[in-house]
Image (tube, rainbow over all chains, first blue to last red):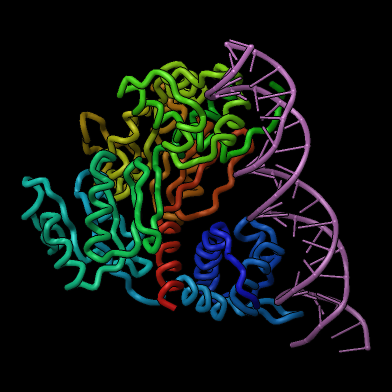
Length: 210
Length: 210
DNA sequence: TAGATTGTTAATCGATTAACAATC
DNA sequence: TAGATTGTTAATCGATTAACAATC
């Protein structure tokens, strides 16, 4: 295996494979071929093999893949076999939603700090965690070994928040604000835009009724 | 302009352009060139022109695009110039989060019905809207002219919910459950996977510290 | 008209899929 | 060994970017 630049799309698919493999593992499925896994997750078998080949040889020719083994390998690759500490910035509707959303905790992402500069929010406790002002970020990041920041503030405030996360030492940011953020290039920035998906639907609805 | 198949990526970018144009319009910016808009949203000028060209000629050679005009054209194309009625299925953490998230309402998506089969939830009122059992879906869809269903239930229940939405007459579904859903091909299905983005971050964090 | 910028075609790039030798 | 399925190379496909004639 050589040093190839791994496509973003490949990483996303690895997450998908990992999830289906977890399900299969839970059902005690032992072995699966790329063709069967492809069928399962609605993808192409060659693509699965190629995606995996970026990282190593996980299968056995003539047999396929051992489900629990491949699942473990993918967990390791995606670094889901450890706990990541997250700082949640902004505890409005979206922030509180993300905090209560169990889907994140399941994969080992633990919200270790919540910050919000709204004085009606900071000081409040949620699930035993105190909401603190943004000024506390550097201390919180250091103290809890926080590696990931989640931005759930209005678009206008997002860049300032990103800057403060970076200054505090955070090297990975998940941004839910509909704004283009600039971060140093050693900081990983991932944008999630909830509106785009709905707008996509309305586009297609309008198209088809045309 | 010919009948070309429009790439999904183009549609997503149209949403982005529309947002930046709204901002520019609000700042009373009159005219913008594809190069300037590209700079603004971090894209390529040729790509913007090509994306727009799928739908018509909106610019003026030698000048650029009239901001408010292009903004209006994109709103029309994305069908954001009308109200879409949404049924929200599942009022757990995620569902309630989505309901309270103002980002959706802003673009003309109105949650006209909330359904949930959990007896501790159905019957409750939120913002004047009563949470009803799933059995009410057909009536609600008809009565409120609901065009979009949002699935915010656990993965195991998602397919059944999708089936019931389709049976009730919904032709567009936004699915937040981490499950592969099967729908008739005249139904538009859009999947949003909140976990994948975080897992992507953890992958890259682990890579860079390797 | 000269300068600017579009709309569109052509070139490039990258990602997906097919094919197949290697091998269990 | 014969059959199956991988890992990998080659072919295809599609999307992005560059180039430029059209035209404001």
